Amino acid sequence: MAVIQVQDLSKHFGTLKAVDQLSFSVNAGEVFGFLGQNGSGKSTTIRMLLSLIHPTSGHIELFGKSMEANRNVILEEVGAIIERPDLYPYLTAREHLQLFAKLRSKQINAARINETLSKVGLLERSKDKVQTFSLGMKQRLGIAIALVHNPSLIILDEPTNGLDPQGISDIRNLIKQLAQQEGKTVLVSSHLLSEIEQMATQIMIIHKGQKIAEGPIQKLLDPNKMVVQVKTTNDAQTLQVILSGSFSNYLLQRTDGIHLRMPDDEIPLLNASLVNAGVGLISVETRNSLEDYFLQVTSNSN
Amino acid sequence: MKEIISIELYKVFRRPRTYIAFGAIAALIMVIQFGLKMDGQSYAGFLMKDINDTLTVDGNVLNGYLICYILLQLLLVHVPLLVALIAADMISGEANLGTLRLLFTTPYSRTQWVIGKFVAASIYTIVLLIWLAFLALFVSMWIFGTDDLFLMKSNYVVLIQEKDVLWRYVGAFVFASFSLLTVTSLGFLMSSIANNSIGPIVGTMSAIVFFTILSTLNIPLFSIIKPYLFTTHMNNWKEFFDIKVDENNEAIYGTILNIAKIKTSLIVLTLHIILFVTASVIITKRKDILS
Image 1 (cartoon, rainbow over the protein chains, first blue to last red):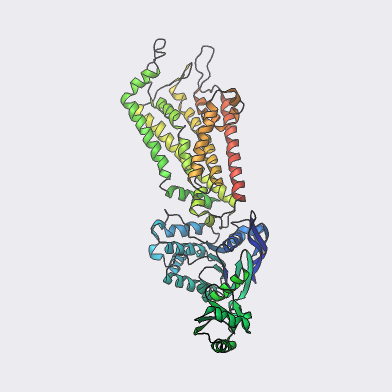
Image 2 (image 1 turned 90 degrees about the horizontal axis):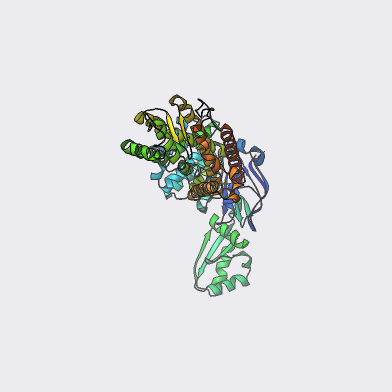
């Protein structure tokens, strides 16, 4: 069942098409990685999902209900953090949760507030005012506010902003746990592609407001097609060999070295061709990461 | 809706800024009360210098009722500026802080939020006015005692019996609450337009000063618009202290000279409140929350 269903969604700011005819769906229990470069339209899309921005056109359904007609009912079941953890500096962490708990129709007791604070590692600092918190602690509190009412859908825009490596790992594990053990649906956007790769089951990449890739992460990162980075003593000669041979179709348009995306059984042939042409081969590295895939599809779109 | 109001009130009264207005009013009133207690007779003599030759006034002229009247004349011009400090920050302050995103992703409509916030700001305004009333009226009554209220108007004097005064203050403070709620709603409107705290606060204060000048200028061109300006009506609480007289020119107990003027002013102020709040709702509903 689709928890999020977006159809032909557009948002224009004057002549700028921030989001352009975007359609996608997120199924229940998925961790949906929402990727894109800065200014690609991710945050605008997320804000439209949460009715913070009015779409220019298109349709949004959450839990099978139109957002336009059922906004308040839908938002009862949504928890969100949007970009920065903006909070009230003069209130404590516990006061934040108490206030936002009041705004839900569900009964949220002190035990649930403690449990949520504990989940994000803030129980010991719960009586401290937010003005004494680091950015990472504010981010954790923002996540706690999103979770306190036990929502079915969690939308996290850059949830690991400002977190240290341990914090990033904790949040990653928390997101995985929410989806796998509690059956929550999570839409998460992040610049940390390795994090998304470790937790997402589905991803979508948008570029200049348009969708350029979508699917299960295992399918997109085809294990039979590796990204190969070739380091030689002479880049021009290397390119000449690649372009003149059967490898030209595999060449990726990247500025950070010579990269190809090719079947792994053809890598020895590439190696042999370069050696036969007298190219001084330094290394042939193979990778199959989301980062490589992301750079490939976004550069192709450019 | 009551959840929104209770949360907004909680936030308002947890902010240090809120208490600036309470502190400022207390300080101003206490300074004036101290000055009048120390040198009040000279002040009373100065006020009555023009009538001393024709009229003999006995009793406690400088009593708590007169002190309160003097204080209200001075303060009800400035209290709107203190009200603006909170009201004009209610929406824009949250936009600036970024917390408006958190509020607007809760299961309440923007209309509910705006109205809830306005109610909270109005409660703050009323509490501030009660504080003002307590200090200006009751503390003055305690310090200076009570007697008949003797007021010097521009070309006549008014003498109101002691037992005929208190209800007039109740009326004056209720009227003042409408004046201040108009300022609250204006601040609110400014707050819904901007995304920072300072602009709406300065904007509200500037609008009050600008329209007050228009209301007080005796230029025929402005006379056409004067009856429609809220600032023209804000000071009409004084009408509660103008009393009808009989054929012997003696005050008629329990009367108000121009009750129609008070009613008109209340209608104009109420219409302004409705207009400003409705505009705030429409603007906030149409707004994209980008900050």
